[in-house]
Length: 228
Image 1: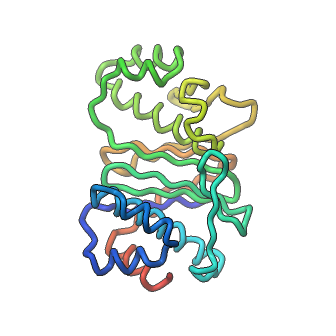
Image 2 (image 1 turned 180 degrees about the horizontal axis):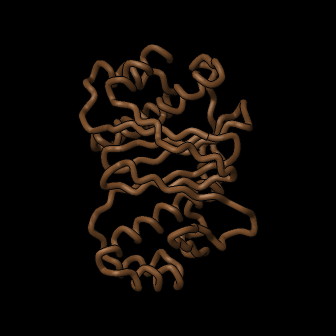
């Protein structure tokens, strides 16, 4: 299992943006070019280029030989190697990606003020109760704990939001994280290395890396141009 993060905190100049986007299929290029904000287009581009670079480095593929498909719920997967699983998330200035030999999900969220009453529409009754029972100083952080953990689980099982977020309950204590969403055993880990953000990973393996592999944007561009 590996986890990568790229900080998209400044705008890539048009030369490199146009060069990188050409490594993608036309369909993906068109989707990226439809974004109204450059920040959204750039983070989408980074995520797609990042996963291609990982595949090339791991398996020696040529970029043109990499083919992705999606399941019935829209989760992408690599068509030619079943044991390669990945998931991408982005929020604020960051793009993160987790890869493993078995299904995996990752979610990152920037911690911002939130109307906790809205949480009642997304969380189970027990989760909402746990949230509101938190000390006011800890409530916002606990909300994003639950939100990213739930999202990582949903993304790992590959059903997207087709079932909503309230069909299962996520519990977090000082020494354990678990869910009643399935009778299978899943493992969770949270990373607090990115200030102002919550990052959660859900996997079928428990061999989580100690740290996130953080790549500076300039280095990401250079590596991508050289490898693709």
